[in-house]
Image (cartoon, rainbow over all chains, first blue to last red; front, side):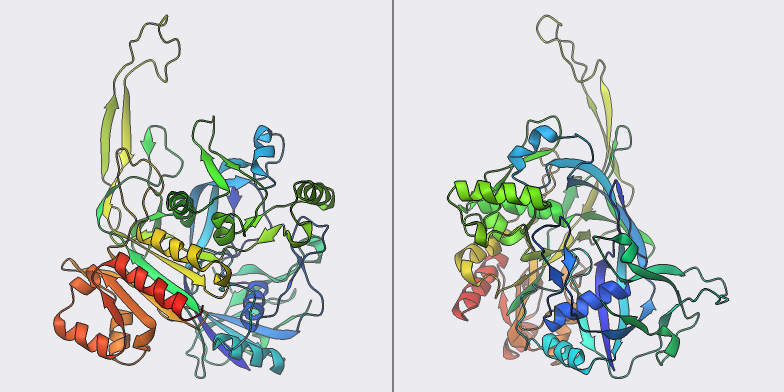
Length: 227
Length: 312
């Protein structure tokens, strides 16, 4: 098992949306944590099939189990920005040609993001991936992935390091249909694996963080990530 | 080798970066941290200004702003080409094209003598940045100004922005901002001179987020901390600048170097943060291998030389 401490001033974990409000999940999602680990390990997960508008995900990616914990719960913010987009409808079509394929329309949008990310990412079930992550963190791995970021390439990471003695934290437990849960304001839906071309194939679950910080990773907190 | 930097600007009144206006009130963008709201400037606004500066410093850029359109607008010279345009090389692009559009674009490229084989529809930004966050919370300051009534006769000028004098109300703040940036230098290998110019542009950053006719605010560094490292992350809080008794401080890194938590040789510290140190501290940091320079632009030049000399 490998536990990483992740610290970042800002992050965003977008759900699939378009339009003038761009929401974020309220905590790092297993799908995003998995993407980050593969980035560090230097494993390319993006796949261009030469046909699709969206970035597809490659096959044959390493399987593993992940557990996530908050040392502190992040705050949610939103900012208004003038963003470039491909409009739905005919707005700005007169600029389409001069934009040479890039987004040709500019509109106000409200983008949500998180601040003060202090997270544990626990990984198990794949020794080879653990080894690659360790090497990647030490800068000893050939990578073609740029610097890691959290959901938006402007949102850089301050610290990402291996922890041997994790302090108590709120571990996120996926809820099953019949689970009885005490009210917890941090209950949230998080994506586990995503499929950008067929939304129905995206896997997600409701997660609830432990009410009190706990030192050991609860058995129930582990989720399998398999593409 | 990667470069991580944090820039701290000088303090000045600013009302540059605005969200959607609330009627005649131009609001500053803010985020709540702890118990206070702090003004912010978006990385997109900073990157837009960097494109302009790269152009001014003589690098070829693909995208240009059109300032006389009905809405905000940009124009590109060509489809993205990182070998030809510095802004494409550093900032990346996304062309969301389905299979029919892709075929059409690749055909166009071929007709123009470009190699469709090496063209990509997406590329990550090599330059990473983050929000510029004020060091001082917003204190609900605003300035009222009034525009005069335009009484030009209709036969001379039939169109007016408004019939009457307008009361204008803008939020304003007096604060420095800090923002981090990062680059993977291996990815910049093919364009070392462009990378050097990009760092120079960060050292002379200006014209971010508009409204400089009334709110001239420079985003150039008053102080700067840079780390050159093989690590994939900075390893410290990239918003680590503090100001106490008008002194610029970066305690996590400075104390960290002095206590051997960080390898001093990876750090380059420049500007007011150095001017504010006493001789003893400067000497201790130099003994630990850190590079110190009172002029932030000179420090950036030193980093650029070091970067190029190391074969990165």
